[in-house]
Length: 170
Image 1 (spheres, rainbow, N blue to C red):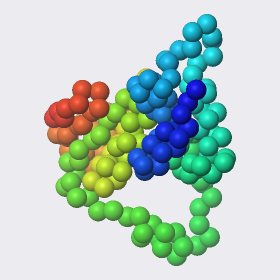
Image 2: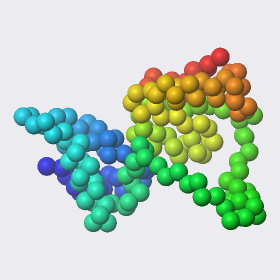
Image 3: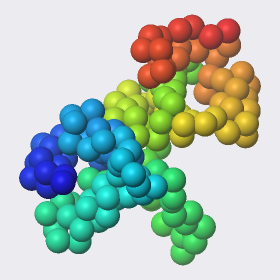
Image 4: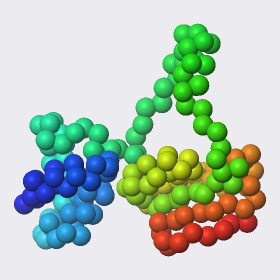
C-alpha cells in the first residue's frame, strides 16, 4: 500500500509541480511501489494516478502540485482592444540577457521539465522536453531554432539531463 502521508508530505515539502509518472518513479526508487505488480497486467502507475487524484479532490494536495504536461489549453480568443493587448504584452515582454546566445535546457522527460522549469524561467532560457521519445517535428523545430532563429547564434550552449553535462554545439 502507498504511504499517503509520505506522498502528500514529500510533494508539499518539495514545492515544485511534478507529474504522476515522475511521482511513480520516485515511489519505485524509494521502494514504496514495485515497478510491476506480480501476476497482474495493471501497472502500479495507475494506482499512483488514482491516489494523486483522490488526494487533490480531498484538498490534501494542492491541485497545482501534479501537472499534466501532455495536455494544454490553447487560448485563441484574443483581446477586446489594441490597448488591452498592449497592456497585457507589456507585462510579459522580456529582454534578452544572453545577447542572442542562450543556454538551451534539453531534457528527455516531461517529468524533468517540471524540475527545470523554474530554473529556465529564472535564467530566461529555452526549455525543451522530448517526452521520452523525440518527435521528428520537435527535433526539426529545435534544430531550426538553434540554427536559424534570431534568438540563437551559431554557437549555443546545451544542458542535457541525459548526459548531465553541457556541450557547445556548432
